[in-house]
Length: 464
Image (cartoon, rainbow, N blue to C red):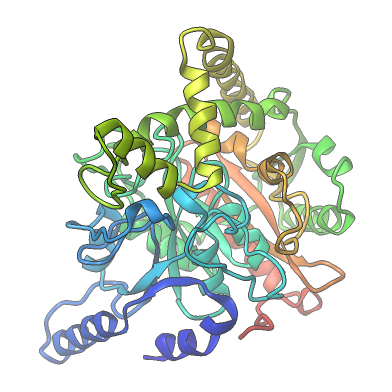
């Protein structure tokens, strides 16, 4: 299989995979070939090489969440997204690296290995779904799955020059995804084109009785929706975002993409999101509080790492102390404090109220526009080790977090390269459950940008 050969060639430089299941992938491919020869039905994604972030269950394979605390654990069932993509015929190549428990923006918080950006291996691929983005950019998978809580699909997509999609909250089942922040987490695809993202989303989306947050609304034909164009669509632009961007290459390319949308018939309208500036603060209270609760199950008693000690409490403390990395510990402590009796109203309660204001900002904005176009990241991929303090890392997600808090659909679309040859993505979002409209608008823009040879989109990164 070509994807496995490509993985063997690029993995020493990129390190996208935590597990490359060559035997399993070949067995799946042979079964598809046998079904085809026998005239039996095969799925719409038959033979598509798929990589899965290692916080999503694949039956019989380890789920590590890139953490030592899940040492020795293997999934006993498929996540719903895994099962649906298997049923569609996708071939699972392996599990990809991430920031531990999906907590990070660079993939440097993995306890198991370092993943590098295929465009420049001295730089990070973004996080937390860095391995899933890097393998698609390196052509060692045609499609991959990530999870997005505050930007963990969209930021790495921007850094690695691929399309990364965060569905509307509830559109894709979270059953079998190891929970980080349950009111924010979503599973979504990475691919090299919007069409491939639409094909994957059509297979994944839909109600799941195993997920209480799953939305029962009918699933449109996302690939058919791509025939629509941008004529008459209103695109909202937050002017202060572009004016205050610290990196002028990012501003220039985003402004160029917005102008291209206008040339395709879209009407550009200026909007404001007045409470979005508080998104980072709100996110790190809400997400940390939910993580504090969700990660309490990793206790060394039922599965994973167990550090023996004199009694149950000592074992619990030793296991969690030795098994969790520093960023996970930091967020558990932040979340536990925010939920404590003396701080709940001051921190979690206030954050929940501001989150409501952010949701209202988007509702008011979408009354005036169909899509919103903003930068995806303040800058291109940065060098490994460059952002050593937590605050500078947290601010990487300043443009992606508000959409997560509002539960709307959003993606990162490659729009060009900076002066150093690093890819830049633009962030597009649409109202909740308007995934078909978002994909249609993104596809129209993508096709126009791809036809502009001067932008150089579609070329392979250095590590390929």
